Structures are given as C-alpha cells and as structure tokens.
Amino acid sequence: MIVTPEEFAHIRRQAEAEYPNECCGVVLVREGSPGDRLLIPCRNVQDEYNARDPENYPRTSRTAYKMDGQEVLRFLRRESEGYSLRVIYHSHIDARAYFSETDKMIAVGQSGPLAGKPLYPDATYVVLSVVEGKVAGAAAFAWDDSKQDFLPGELAELPL
Image 1: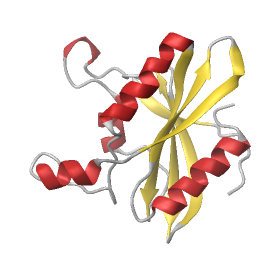
Image 2 (image 1 turned 180 degrees about the vertical axis):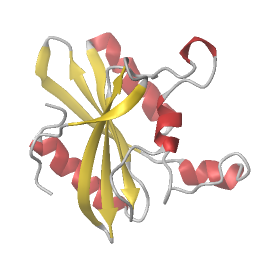
Image 3 (image 1 turned 135 degrees about the vertical axis):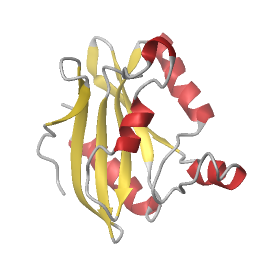
Image 4 (image 1 turned 90 degrees about the horizontal axis):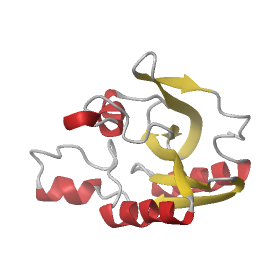
C-alpha cells in the first residue's frame, strides 16, 4: 500500500486547500510496524526562493514546489525513531498527474556519487492533478534501478 485511503483524503484536502499553489508533504513508516505511519504536510517555500533569487528559482509555487528545509530536517530526524521516508507527494496545478522532468531533477542527485541516482530510492512519489481547485487524478512513480528511471506504479483504488 502506497497511501491509505485516510492519508489520500488528507492529501486531497491539502491539495485543494493550497490551490492554486502546489502542495507537498511526506509519509513516513516505522520499520517493522507498517501500520505506524505519519503523514506530514510540508510548507511549499518555492515563492520565497523565487522572490529572493528569481534567476535561479524562476518558477513560483503554481508550477513548482520546494519543501521547507526545517521541515525536511524534522522528518528526517524521525529516522532515529525507526521511521523511513516512503512517500513524497506534491500536486500539479491545472495539469495532469505525471512525473515531470523537473520532478526527476529534484528526485535525483545532481553531483558527486549520487549524480543521476535517486536521493530516496525507497520512496514512491505521488503526484496529484488539481484542476480548477479539485483533485482530478493521481499517479505514483517509483525508481526502477534496471531502467535508471522513475516508472509509473499502481495506486490502490482511491476515491477521486
């Protein structure tokens, strides 16, 4: 199971509430206890980066997401409690649910030993399509080592 129906309902509400901006967040799962899950919505700080440095961050939160660094540190610290990052989610605004080239660029290392490799190889990326303020679709993508790419996966039947 990638996300539970309850998690999806929460993610859906978040995506619709944050429209016309992209939403983002994660789901952590405690190792050995698959029922012990934490859904953590994150603040999209893309507009702040765009305002400070539009040359390097030309996109706004309507077309991109950047998770707040402090929130990322907080959820990564949960690893010491046995949690691991299993889902990274975000929405696409007035577009379909697909894994864009920008999504891929964010998901892989850009230099050093992780260049071209997934930063979170065990995570599944869930993308929601939000059209005119309502979730219109969702898709999941996971790293395939043999293809060296993110490929679509199955999302259990979720209420769209």
